[in-house]
Length: 123
Image 1 (cartoon, helix red, strand yellow):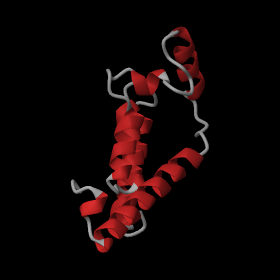
Image 2: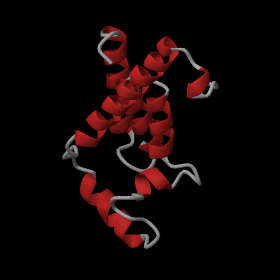
Image 3: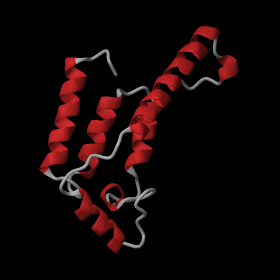
C-alpha cells in the first residue's frame, strides 16, 4: 500500500501488520530449515571455496552467480508481499538449478509448487 501509516484507517493498518507478520513468519520458516544433505553439497562447497569473492554464508556461488541481484533479496521482497513460503522455496530452487543440483533442484521446485496447489490455504 502506498499510503503513509498516518493516512491509513485502523483496518488498513491491521491488514498491513498481518501481511508483514505472515511475511516474517515465512522468512523464519526458511531460516530454520536444515541444509539438505545430498550428493552435490560437497562439490558446491568446493566450488565456493575456489571463488574468493563468494562467502559460504552471505554469498554462496550457487545463489550469487546470476548477476547483481541476489536470490535472498528477491525472496525477502516477495515474502514482504505475502507470497506463500512454498512458492518462495520453489523460486529458490529455480534460481540455483544451473549452479547447484541441476535436475534435482528443478524437481524440488516442482514439488513445492505441487504442495502449494494441493494445499492452497496452508502457506
